[in-house]
Length: 258
Image (cartoon, rainbow, N blue to C red; front, side):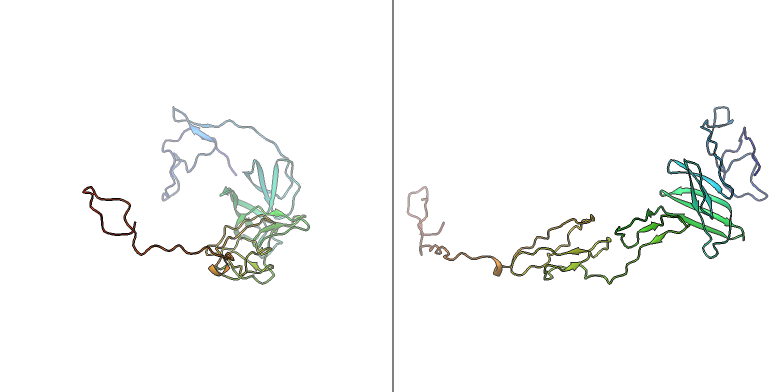
């Protein structure tokens, strides 16, 4: 790749496609530099780092407070550098020939790679969790093997789904339900109260921590409300109650109820 030192740009930055090629007096982009008051292009000062990278690595990208290079094989690289394996999707024997683009987008590396056979493929390099023994992984979670092989694995549900939560459904200890919007967890009823326990009218806010507990409060039916053994007698109103107040004229008002 030829490198040229630019010291002037009369036309500024332009990304228009011009017949016959780009104007030599314009720039497509200006990275790690700036234009001073005189119009000259000045490189931003920075720290130079020297790394001895193994043969077969391609590209270079700043990501996660370090540098990232790419290869179709696992490589041992110096501290401060990460090597991402980029493998041809249908032929893993194809060597990585070039990296045309690599940049973090939404905190994930987006990479355009070319292989020895000329195929160009696009990759969205999500960062998976490292595999660990005796660990519960939720459906859809990405896991990387302890010995990198260029692949990541997505956890897939193997058992049948449990009933979804619904309002006004009878509940018993041991019942298992899942939220109407899947969150990777299921919930087991471990305690009930009342003669006819059931779910409420509104779906709970489900916690997403292992072992977390949530209480679903439900109003009891009138038949479930305990009744006193000797209810107090109902007060009886007299047929006519004389008003407590008289009018200004002093005449006796008609009977009425206050």
